[in-house]
Image (cartoon, rainbow, N blue to C red; front, side, top):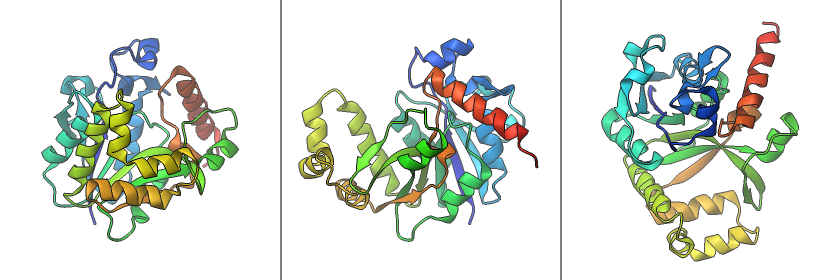
Length: 258
């Protein structure tokens, strides 16, 4: 099976502290280890045999002109929000096969991480998400602070790895767009997600499977999660402290023999 890959690299905000600190226009272009952040992601994706064509969603193709082999990338214009950019990307790919979606701010992703996610896709799902347990992350990096989803069967952190298997995935992204629109309207968001699942989550009685089933009912999709046993899979770069951690981890990888 050959996968298409979609990398979201558009600006989510105009005042990104990581980009500002590095003096670049986009977080995706922040240099780490002498290479733009997005190049680390591209290198890992290109090393996975199951991945075929790769597309990048970004505002201006010229921003990627200095990347190696940038002529083999398909550039898709970014939209005004992550969900719309993802929808644009899926529509532009026009593929009947599965699509892996990730983001440009995950420079710690490795071919092993990507392959694990692809190899552990459950049967029958319209879309899946990669999640890592918070205890795994804290065991590897005790000082890091990660945003977690506190389910009754264990807190987890997203890994910015998403798989779309059917055209129903577009319904999920449309729902994501509605959540974005309602983010400043808590009652509207509560009704959208569902009052009972929201209450169970708030009281710590909602397990992950029940959360996915509830979201699936709301979106008309079958959803699943892939357990990612890699702390590095859950570390993205959202703030300068993340950048310092990622730089330290990558330097440590370079000193490991072999």
